[in-house]
Each structure stands twice: as structure tokens, then as C-alpha cells.
Image 1 (cartoon, helix red, strand yellow):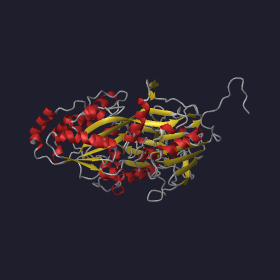
Image 2 (tube, rainbow, N blue to C red):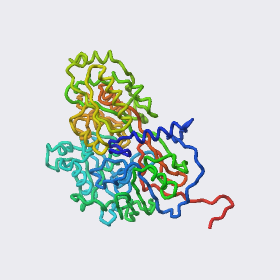
Image 3 (cartoon, rainbow, N blue to C red):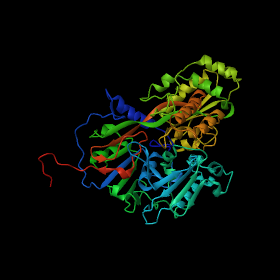
Image 4 (tube, rainbow, N blue to C red):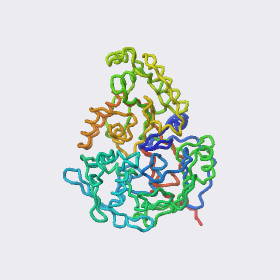
Length: 550
């Protein structure tokens, strides 16, 4: 989701987080495996933080982002925003904080047609916005259609392509909203017609793009204090801080224990550490100055459903997958990946039930690369245009780009490095004046589809301009399957991306958080690094045997 160091399912630069986490991990002799999650505790310097005086109020710091969030979720792409949205918005489903399995949220119940293409959702009768307005099925329909409206240019609109008519409406091929398979019956019934069966639909509906929008916000540019339907609502917001309080009208308000949230934003690791040391912040998400932490017992690093990779754009002669394959074979993969703690040979982080995919590992095979160049009509690279590698001004990006440039110039192909400032980098990836780009993608929902759908020819996330008929056919077939057979087909699709030189994976990205889970319940390390606020609560302090508390 997004493009900064905290980004989730969008795209991000994770290098800072990778390096920081790697520094922590490599300091350990033996990482501990605990219940399927890796936790790497550092030595604690035995300088405990002050006890929290008010256990109904939680302060969180999102470190690595000092601009504050975009509250209009239709425009969102940052991980910090996705986390904040768990407090203020809620769709039909939300994630279980431990297993990531979709659980019913605004949907009280649902029915699926015999052909598994029509889903009928019943909205909870007691679901309300914080201002008291009832949550209606029409609020979902209107929000989803606004996501698809071409003039809104929403980053995630292609996620809706599984809905009948959605892609044509999104692309402007059909301007009639009634052609889209989203309809309502009365105030509480939402009917969604899909192009094909999609067993992962509930997981996708956990994503914030599928949230409802209050009618007052649908065409508004002012989302500073949105009328929202989640467990909290915003009472005050500045560039550096958001204050939220519990929504007592939330349908599941009895589950919400913490009454007030203070969310801070900073790109200063020292400031984050100071807020932890003082006891003001009880959770730091993102980068932090580790050496400045007095109490390191809260450091948690765990594998995440995220991959940092480069890609070769399918433009000009590079539409020929033989040429992309030649570039891939020539690269020195060992030297490129050795720096990372979690090097990746595949695009998708291994998950339960997903078949093993043969990753990219053979490197420096210039003989086969030259053969492919000649076969494609460009012997010794003669006639190929200059390769432009677009990178950020970071040490690691420069290192990787120089490895690439040396390998490809060795094939006889001219190469140019194009360094773009961080502030402009992600927008520059939408341009057509480069050949190689890099991003980190964190899964927007717990399914391989979140990685693969962005390579489909009509996806608005397809910065690589990937267009492969064999890949499209596999993705279509996967929509009609479930379970192991579906995963098998998706693995075949991933294999194509790797074998045909579209995706060049480098490392899996770990999640870094500073949080005391002996103090806070409901916070679990997980593969998406998403921690819904409604489940968080301070643990009840119990006296030791024989000790009375006053």
C-alpha cells in the first residue's frame, strides 16, 4: 500500500528499514523463533521507562514520516495511513489481529450465489457513524463508484476490477455507473456481482479502499475531521499529531478499551527514541535510533509480506521477454543480495500453502545472455537503446545500480543512472522516460494476488507496463479456482514474471516496531505489520502473591 518507508501494499522504499532491522538482527547470535514469528531481542540496558499514569490513553509514534496522513483513503498509499485507517474507518470485513483471517466488520452476514459470483451483504443494523447517522449500503456503493471514477485517479482502483463492469468504468470505456456490478436493496443490503468466483474476496474487502464514505464527504476536499464509522474519530489534527477518541456509537464499542489515541509523526529517529525513553510513547512504528533507547526490551523485528525489487519496463524492444531474460541472467545476483539480511530469490514471500517457486539465482551467465540477445536480433547489444536505471539518492540504490550497469555494459548495451530525489521518485515512476525502476511492495491483504494483480496489463499499479498474454491467462484461470489449485496457478504466474525478466527481487523486508507486549494486549507481530487499534488494551496489573495494591 504505499510509498514511504512505512508503506504497505502500495509501494515503498524500505531500504532504511531493511538496514536498520538488519543491524539489529545481525547483532544476535541466535534469533528466536516464537510461534511462527521471529523476535530478536537486544540486550536490555535495565533503565526502565516510567509507568503510565493514564491507562486509558495510548500514544503512538510513526517514525519515518513527518507530514501526517492523507485522510481521504481514496488517495492513500502510505503504511502509516493504512494503520490509522484501522481506527477511523471500517469496511465489510477487517483483519483478525493475530491470524489476519478476515472477520465480519460492518457486514452482519452475507450470502453467496450458487455460481459464486454474486455476494449479498447485510449491513449491521446498529452500525453508525460517530455523528449518529446510520451506515447505509448506499454509502458503500457511492464510495466504491467514486474510487472507480476516472477523474479521481485513485491509486487502488484496479483492485475493483474483479467486480463486473468495474474495469470498463474505471478506464472510461463505459460512463454508466449502473453498468458496474454494485447495487443496493433498501438501506442495509449491498449486492456485488463479480466477473468470476473469487474465494479471496473477503480478504480483499479488508483493504481500506473498500470502506464506506459519509455522504457529506463524497465530493468534499475537506477531510480534516471526517465523519467516519470506525472505533475512533478525530478530534484534533496538526501536521505532527492526530488526537482521536473512542466512538461510543461504534457497533462493537464494548470491545474498545482505550479511550484516547495520540498519534505523532516524525522523521527523526532520536525524537522517537526520546519519546520511548520518557514513557510518553508506548509504541514506535518504523525507524528509531536504536543506540539511544534506554530500554530495548520492546524491540520486535519480524518477517513481513513485503519484497524490495527492481523491474524492467516492457517498453520498446524490452517488450521481448528474451531481452529481459538476457539482462536478468547477466546480473551478479550473489554480490547484489549479500548485503541483505533476508535476501529474496522470489517476488512473493513464502506463505502457508503457496507452492515453491524457482527463484532467480543464476548470475553472471553472459554466454546465455549474449545468445538471447542475438536470437532477439541484437547481437552483442548492437542497436539496443540506452538503459535508464532510475534510483533514489541512497547508498544502496547506487550500489545496486552500479552492479547492473557494469553487467549490462559488459553485454555491449549503453546504460545511464538517473537519480531522482525521494520527494519526486514515486511520481517519476509513472513517466515513460526510464527502463529500470525499484519499489518495495507490502501486501495490501493476505493473499498472493495483491502482488500479482499489479502486473496485469490494465492495472493502474502496473508501472512496469507489463503485458504478457500467458500471464493474463493464468490470472484469469486463478479466479475460477480455490485452495491449493488456485495457489498453484498463481505460483505459475509468478514463475513467468521471474523467468521472463519482469521482476528482479532483492530482499524481503522485515517489520520493525518498539512495543511492550507485556503491557499492551492485542498487538501481535504479523506478516502485514497491521495492528487494528480496536483490539489494543492495557493489561490489567495484577499484584504479586501476598502483595496488596491500594
